[in-house]
Length: 123
Image (cartoon, rainbow, N blue to C red; front, side, top):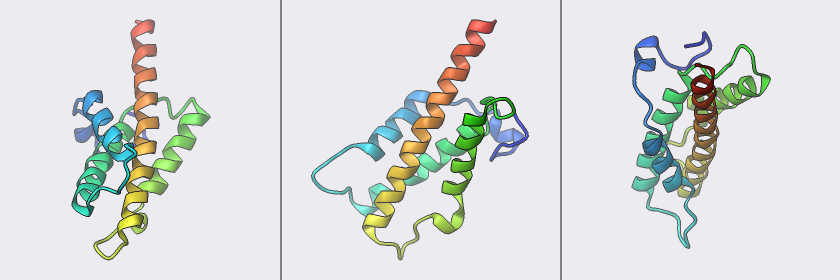
């Protein structure tokens, strides 16, 4: 785990299940004729934030890769507590935030997959 992680080393010991991450992202990014109910948005957002934190706790090559550094900067910006919707936030604002976290979580999951594939190819 790199020095620029969003979680403690204990949390980094958890195994990332990419299928679960993908399912949460797919839920957040599904296009429908109407927005999901607010409880669904809030639950999906909580799931995505958890997945994003887990992915940010992984060593994705932060020290070597400027693109990964930019990804982490975006992750810290999105996870900033002042940006998160509250109970008083509009339904649409909560929906937009869920989608923003979903898109970023997908980018982190892709970086994680790529790093795993590189690690497997290297040894």
